[in-house]
Length: 185
Image (cartoon, rainbow, N blue to C red):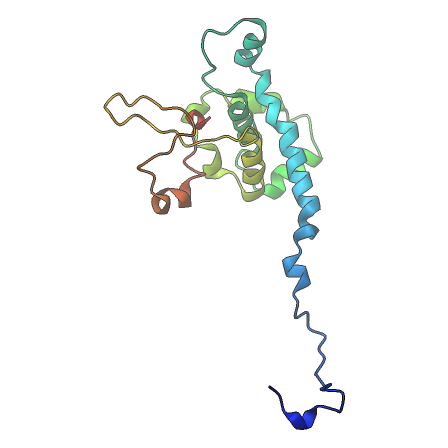
C-alpha cells in the first residue's frame, strides 16, 4: 500500500538512497576475525603437548602403566602456560614471547609448576587472550568434562560425560571456567 500519486505508469516509485550500511554486512560477516582465530589455534596447538614432557607421561611411554596419570598432559600444559604468563597482562606476555630474552625460559615456568595444586586455578587469574589460549590448550581432546559423583554415599566419581542431575546452570555457568580443576580431565 503506497501513495498512488507517487507511482508512474510502469508502477515504479521514487525511493531515497543512503550511504549508511543498512545491511550491516561487516557486523554479520565474521571472516575478518579468521586470522585471529587461526593465530590463537596455532599458539594453542604449539603449547598443547608441552605436558607430555613431564616425567609421568614419559614413563608411560616406556612402561606399561598400572594406573592412569594423576594429571593429564593437557592439564600440565595449561599449568605451564599459566606459569609462563604469570601475573602479566596480555600485552606483557606477548611482548616477552615476541622478544625472548635469556631471563624468559620455559624451564623457569616449569619450575614454577611445582606446587601449583595450591596455586590459583588456571582461569582465575589469566588475562583474556591468555585465557582463550588456555581454553584451547585444555579442550583439544573434547575435555574438560564436569565430573559427576555417586550420590549413594560412596562419593565415587562416575564415568566422564555422565549427566549431573544436580547441575544448576544459573549457579554454575557464570564461573564455570574459573572453577575447572584437574579432575575434570
